[in-house]
View (cartoon, rainbow, N blue to C red):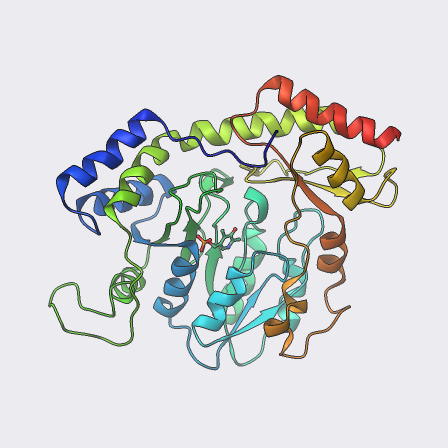
Length: 368
Ligand SMILES: *Cc1c(COP(=O)(O)O)cnc(C)c1O
């Protein structure tokens, strides 16, 4: 079976995790501090705050950026649900705007019409491993004095004009969930250059407790602390991430070269200013293809290849998020691509023969 993702833990990683158990210090200590320092440096940001999930990173980033009850935050309807749920968790309202069907990321030309007096931030998502349209989004944010909180959960190490994901806005948020390019099982991190956001974030993840004075609280906080076990694994993962991303990029090239001639498929496109790290390699199966998307997924499964749909329902059509009056037809691009996308294996453990097999199986499906 060729799976969509494959978790491989090296002996060195196991050794590092074991050394945490032996140390007797299990949560938020030296390893976490070291992971934060190295992660910030890697992203080209001044500060990093480690937390226990990508969702916790988003929630913390929003609150530390001053987003609160009654505020509106503009985001994409075509993303993982945590992008929007974190806005609700901060007490704010997610306001959706349609995507660019080529990049799958928020379409900046549609943002301004959504801005109201209540809008406080834009939360762009770097979908599948590719950074959003930074220049245009930042231009709008500057014009209306909005915060930019980046959901870079899928893009550790991705670049735009030579700068790393998560480093363009006020805060960048990452996830280390088990299937992500850099994984620790569960885990997350936020990066920022803003000292105030940094200080607030550190308190928020620790019950709102002051870092300097124990049992002194600045306000409501959560327990979003990272364990030393997670950080030990994360530090090892960070050493490998560039290699992992290079391999994924190489695999994506092989898939694209193999599939280019197949009628009815739209393949990922990467503009020259971007380094796409292929958290997912996502094709669009259009009406021109021989069989429909569900049939293709079935065909691949029958031939030992897993594929998956990220994401089958745009967020504005999910019940608790559609409460704000959204309905079918509101975001035609997001709705259209959600019917067409299919992510196929691209991970770093695939061999050339696996990639050829994937390409040939899809070509066979096209000839049925
Ligand atoms: C994975 C992911 C998250 C959430 O991260 P968790 O670590 O699972 O909480 C948020 N946004 C996007 C786009 C993601 O892919």
